[in-house]
Amino acid sequence: MSDYPRRSAAIAVPVLPRLQTINGVCGLLALGLATCAQAAPAFDADSPWMLGDWNGKRSELAQQGYDFKLDYTSETGSNLHGGYNHDKAVRYSDQWALGAHLDLQKILGWHDAEFQLTVSNRNGDNISNDRVGDPRTGTLSSSQEVWGRGSVTRLTQMWYQQKFLDQALSLKLGRFNQGEDFGTFPCDFQNLALCGSQVGNWDGGIVYNWPISQWAMRVKYQLTPEVFAQIGVFEQNPSNLENDNGFKLSGSGTQGAVLPVELVWAPKVAGLPGEYRAGYYYSTADSQDVYKNSNGQSAAATDGAYRSASSKHGMWLNLRQQVTAVDGDSSRGLSLFVNGTMHDKKTNRVDNYVALGGFYKGPLDARPQDDIGLAVARIHVNPAYRKNSDAQNRAAAVYDYSDPAFMPLQDTEYNAELYYGVHLTNWLTVRPNLQFIRHPGGVDKVDDALVAGLKIQSSF
Image (cartoon, rainbow, N blue to C red; front, side, top):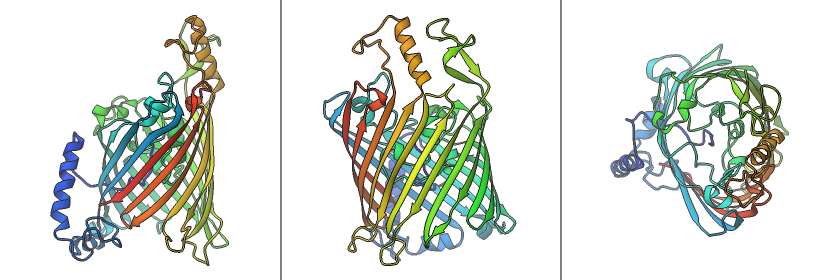
């Protein structure tokens, strides 16, 4: 479910139905390009690309407005201790993102215009699903954020952006996801609760993050050099989540629209950068109460017909500030953050979430581009949702947690992660990490879990 534009740009390619196909394309691409990479040869540690500069052609194309990317992210998780199933296992998941960003001013002479196209492919399994969480509830977060929304190839970005008024006003149209622009946050952690825009993680039925795209529009206005405001309209269409609709362009199945609005302040405090975001979203589509029927009674205990709601809403807050530098070098130092969301208590399983932590870039003089991250997140289940699970159990006369028909009662899940990012080259970063999950799925009868992870990010 995760989203974050770390999963970079991508290129116009035919539909790739299977990972074998995209691997084959990548293999041919690597073979052909590596042989001609001379300006910055393939596997040069100082190059931003594993395959080098294609004998200078890649930089030449970028100067002409054509920026091509092929990015890879893999995440591996192993349950060291605890969880629902104590049998040790290792799970692997990955993502490929193939894309192109076109500067239309350079290419066509269209002033302040650009176009982005991205195709992504995800595969693999998640240790949270069959080892950490009770299968009846799952976990609230995920120890491998890159897993989610199906093992399938998707059109993830296809948008056009035009800027006006000396770039103060920008209009973005096409197919993209809300987390790409609203509530954005880096995705260096491997745990989902600490990676990327968070609203879609806890209200994923209507707010879609990467790799899901939908028809959308975003208008942004730069009020001052440090402050901008933006508003969006996103198609709310659950059929976009289906694996068979990875390249769907029609609007069939649309139920309404999600309308996010956000104010962003990006100051420099003592010369160090910060970013402060506050946002609100409103869904125009019908939703369903998590507990009551139309008479205000427990639906599970009476007629089983949950009352509908004509809308749904929530809000978010992201606070991030660099607080130290190293010998005046602001590219190194400590940054702290706090993220939080609140959701509709009538219709949403999670009613609030909060996370806090920090990153330290350049911890060692000999390793100025390495980084360390430490953070903890709290995810709270709506009490009405919990009451509904209890009512379901009572209606079925099931009271024993060990009974397969029993629906575990969910409350609060905590996720913590410590990672060290090893910047091996400009195109390869490896982040071993250790995660602790307390009350997986918010179920206190599930043992606390310790998960070892490994996140690899590379650009070809």
